[in-house]
Length: 151
Image (cartoon, rainbow, N blue to C red; front, top):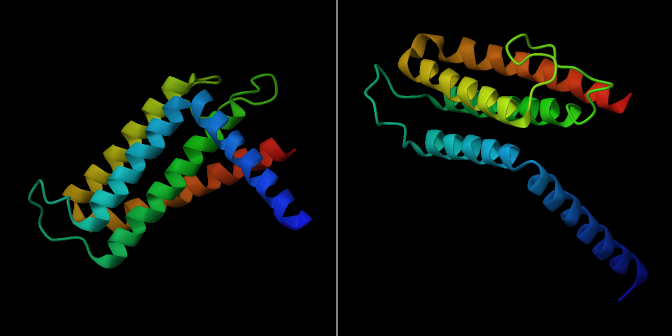
């Protein structure tokens, strides 16, 4: 085995261990990510026909929902990550408060994610503006949180 391959294996093991530690430390985040993934799979696979609605989802609306869920999950992760250092960072969301717990963050993002998808499901005329607009807001706050962590 060449040296670069050996270094790559060590790097991958270290990276894998860091990922495992993150999820062990943040089990609520793991549950949030799993919830979001289940919603995405259900939405994309067409399993959302549990309740009747005026018209089915178009492919464009499905992609908007995937965008929203990805942005919403990223926002939840960055919000949780910068709460590890309350002396430097504080949350600006008035609903969560300045220093929310992991449970509060997980609950808030789970409820708002499912609630947004439910509203989009029940009101087809609001799907695109709601999902793309709220996804864009989540992107903004994700980038904001990420920039704070990098400073």
